Image 1 (cartoon, rainbow, N blue to C red):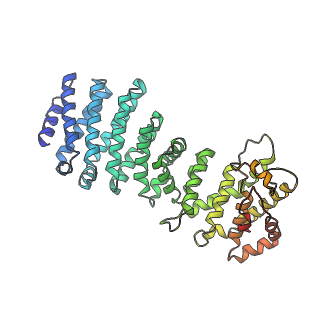
Image 2: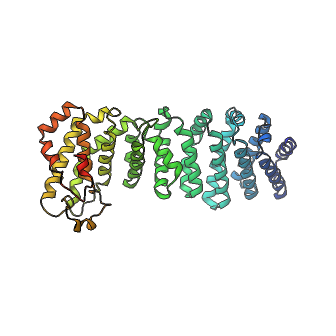
Length: 414
């Protein structure tokens, strides 16, 4: 391995220009890449070896930026990052070594910038392959290494966001992996999570996950739910479908028992505030030609119903009298509308009509979730119990005790 590094260093010092010179350098790099597959060889890597690779990255960047044998130069750059990717696999020693070579990360950032600029003009698929290798290297370098995670995020987050513009699924998935690795391990780093670049990354990851069910994206969304006050920054930037995905991930997490860390209280309070300010939208279900979609608000009510069942976890939500008043008014409103005729809120108690119920509709199970939320908020909370009595909530809830195909299991909630 050492002889190969020496040959690479010698080839770099001569500043290759011709196709044959770049081809020779590429062959040497393929040998290095294969060497790094062996654990014993990875352990032999030195700071001098790393400096040789940094010099080569600078050389390749210069070639791409100045249109010097771009294809051959890019091929060499690809092999450099395959080598770096392989040298980090389950090797904390090499991860530590990289922590002391921030200039390698800076050179890699320049590589991404040069490749993006070149791709804008050429649309060469080989450039995408190189970008994938760079991102894989960043991922391997940061796994289980907090110092590298913070360093990589600080240097690369802006460039990583730009990679989503290429619309290459593999590249986007690798980028999600790096994002999850770098920031999910730093849940207490509020500055990292709330920076404008991180917020942009979160919106990119959520959008991608809606489109292709990215596993790394789901992991990152679950981590995001645990970060204080993040919803208030991210949600104004999301489409309804994207909000629903986040809420589905959150529901799954709330349903689990013995969580190591629950969704943030401030994010639950954000949901409660949104319900209080937007719940009127639900009544628009009966109005024609409405542009507003109540699906998000209905999902928020479902989440609050689950969250408030954890009575000691979210006391701020459980004791929110304004939220309770809003929920009682809403249940009263849809109950009255349901009594006016055959509509979305009317009770379905005949078996013959059960097949006509649209279970995908936003109003399905809504009464059940409202009753559940009222019950949870009344549990061991005398001020809430008094409020329910004052608002005639008890007879209202009891009015929901009949069998209703649109609200299965509602009797269990009353």
